[in-house]
Length: 243
Length: 184
Image 1 (spheres, rainbow over the protein chains, first blue to last red):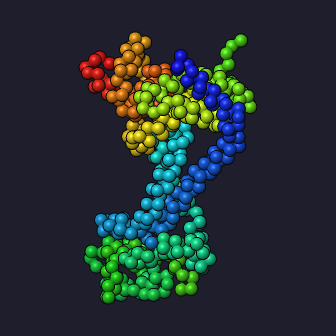
Image 2 (image 1 turned 180 degrees about the vertical axis):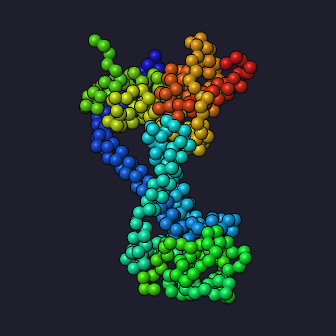
């Protein structure tokens, strides 16, 4: 009896609150708006992730790190040491946020978390690498060089600078010398590159004036002690337009 | 005249017939009270929680898609309320870090318990629910007492169907451990 009264109580109280106007239905447009903002948020974060992955690819290309693994174990150490880990960290944070958002959708929560995480990773890496093939970052880096990119300029100068890694040098061979050559970098300054028996030359052994090359090695007072050299097709733009 | 379905009544409420919401309360009050009592073990004020569930259901009724089943929708609201209530008194495991959800479980398929076995388990559960962790208690309550299938429970808890199988299996194992060596 008491239970029945209690039951009626709940129903009466809720209905009373509804009829008195204390409790009101949210209009449908609120849910539509919420869903739209939610989907927009998902796309913004997805775009940010694509942007970060493509920037990572751009940065690796600009610094010449993409050639490093070709020089064996030491090259791999360089690659891991100078890889833009900050961008990886940012990607992981946004990946976590995106996963939390995506899990609200039935298609995601009905499958094990691993599937949606792997799905997002595949989309982001594939899409990011495709975006890296577009002129987006090159164009933005070009603006940054001309000081026309107010907010993102420091960012592009940091991740897009071709010479940010001390031990990676790129430029044009301007003169052959005994045991090496003279390298002129895109800014115009020159360095002596010293080739020894331990220098890794995976594809070429001869360098002539006019060859564009990337050199991995520490710069000492006598010159760059190269542990790896490779010919390249394109030289990156220098960090400053004025140079 | 055939009785209207929950979804038809929900559509009426959405259309402005607020009186019809009383019918939905009438249909779900006892079910949700039972769910609350068994899942929360009587540690929270079920009356307040039920009132809150129905108020939230009414406020958000226009987000309900009448082409889908009403029952998992309102049970989802109840689940959220109950989890919030549990979290106020104890730490409830974070769903996103739960390995049951993280990895696929190909072996976790829906079992077809015979009615007699289901009744036997229901009786055992009735006596031992308090000894089972909330994570496993909830699917057990929904499966054995609310007669939901794996798919419906998966919609209420918003976890993969295979995870429901895993949790029920573990819940039954925990029950077995708590009541001794009884054939389950």
